[in-house]
Length: 398
View 1 (cartoon, rainbow, N blue to C red):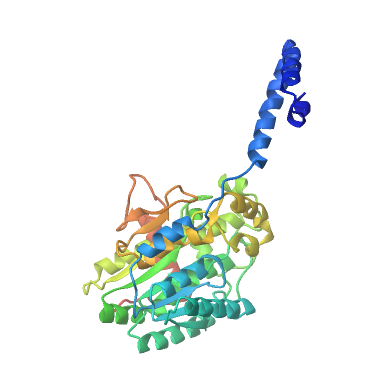
View 2 (tube, rainbow, N blue to C red; view 1 turned 180 degrees about the vertical axis):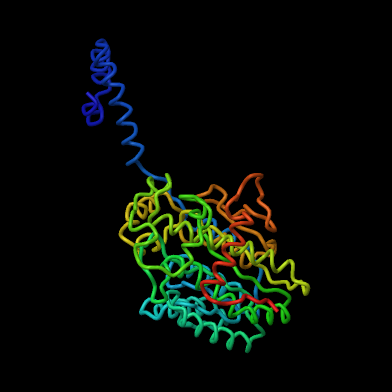
């Protein structure tokens, strides 16, 4: 009956068939279910309204202020949100844009692409790649020297966006002996911030302020749990929960790939809050702002390039996520907006997508009871002390 109604246009005959079918109660139920199924199919495969996946990007970027004469450094700019953040810095007039990437053909292509973009809009930005492998602490140290040298020539480092990251990797270690996710996402960024801090101070002296932005994730709250010291320490491969990829089990407390990712992204947001708090206590009251951002679910290469265990999630992100351009906006607001304050965290309005809004303002959750893990004093203290201990450094702000 359903097939006939869909394929034939004889309305009177269709009506007769329906009346005959509905005279039988059993048929009535069957037809009702079938009609609902057809309605769902038609909705799923019918004509779809065209959606501009960069609508928010186009709305918000023009509103951001010019950043003429400023120096911006961004980690992880070979694709996705890092590329868009670099484009925003170029568009808004940055004098220097430093691309901190691991040496690869992708890094070369990204630099060439951004140079072409700058030329296409007549931007004068000097664009330069600084080799930086976040899974090699010596590489980070060398990169910091280069960043400081270039920044000194231009009056300091105005903005550092810590964007590089990997997701849900196997229980493996870097050459330095740390969990690959914790070192890539947090430890190396902590070290980089420590080593270029004098360039922040120089920019603050030259142009009034400097900012560091930690690109966290909604994974700071999921699978859940407080920060734990063991994830920041050197240890043997396979000893931090193994290679369990089932996120449902990890939501119930099992360790695994997503739990380690959660630890690293929670570390990002807690580090930003702790740095902001410590900066506010400094006697000199330096106008150096520490902020965090969450991109929501953004369609980037993160899910597809990190590990095979993320393939299902990558498919979900492709269907439900927002574009990388729109996803970069919380970080862009934190890095460039005149309304951004130290201790702020920007997130998508609708959790997975939407316009960028603040979930934390000056270190205080906007919603009562919100951001409990990120604003936990215990977590904030732990990430600071654990990073200093792991890296054997003293993050001195003098």
